[in-house]
Length: 299
Image (tube, rainbow, N blue to C red):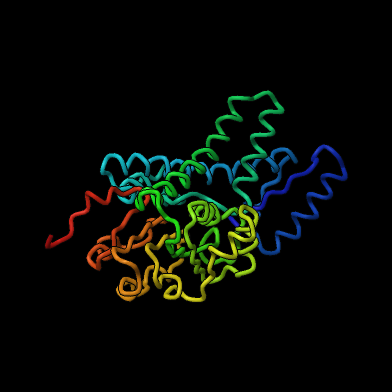
């Protein structure tokens, strides 16, 4: 364990508080450098934790807001993110455009900041932080609208392969996953949703969808698959919802032959090589990229 910092909050004005702080600090000193252990008041430590997650979520919403502009102007969000991330004042972390952030912490901590601000009559501050969540909702909503519009609002009975259900790669955690909302939107359009995720548990996937849909809808329209190839068989489209590394290295030529024609791919994580997919024959749409501007070599 090598944390960037350890925050210890307590009442430094009382003997008991100082003793508790020092006891806790002495434990962490066994493996954390003294300079990385920050001692502060209880309020400062609580607010630091909320603010850290809020700042990270803010960066994601900021790059996602720019991605929407990119799609309208022909700019490429990958180029823009690389350019601004090379500025040492900004740095490259959390500048990956996507269909939005998930997980158990970001939304909860921002809502806590909003609540605290409202209680303190800081309504403008509350509105500012709430706008981070609004941008997140806008991002996944417009991604879903893009999918639906590409099928002329007629998804009834069409099989859509969902690649990734966990809220991020390398975890089985599905809490607040954007994939839940994508699947729900497709189910509302009466699509057949075939879900593949390397780690998310089938019973958890079903439970997450049942929180938004009736059991008969989930039973009839949701298929949880053990392989990606199973998910794409007979599908009209692939939707990338989680940035699993394995999705970069799959045999999309094989997927192409198993899918309805023309097959579509919606990259909600700006994860894949779009030019290669287009050469195979996929119709590709991606967050932050105007695909009509892509010119293939030799075409």
